Length: 176
Image 1: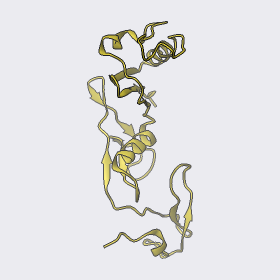
Image 2: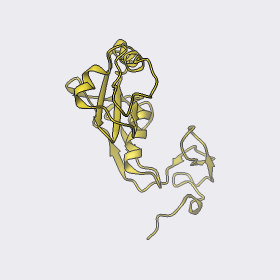
Image 3: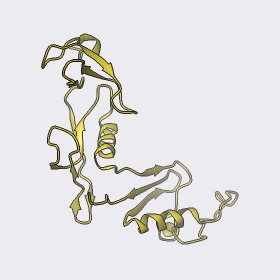
Image 4: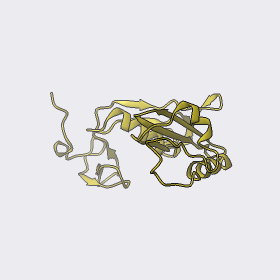
């Protein structure tokens, strides 16, 4: 059985009012909204995701800013939209709920393990036959690390020579 699309729904399941497509939030798909009561009718397969984000020996939690459960503490998560990949949904939900996602991935030369601890030092550059023609000052990563440190965050790097590197930045939320 194929999951019915939004074109198959015309009336609100709560009050019977007419449903229309509306853009509720930039970057998200249009949603069906009741013109009478304002109910948002989400078309999704009800597959949910939950992000368990470790931080300082605990887990990142968020106070819900919307119903249901307004004001309750929860782990970031939510529903997968129709056509959305599960891994994209967990990234989106975590970003939406706790404003947390900074990751840079490249498929460059990779950084040999012996240099990983040095790449955040000012003016340090990995110099070998492959990288010697790449220009730069060796200040970019130290500047990023300084900013992350000043915000109380963490920067992590994983790298594989010949495959590339992934830089992940975790920033704490301001108490609110």
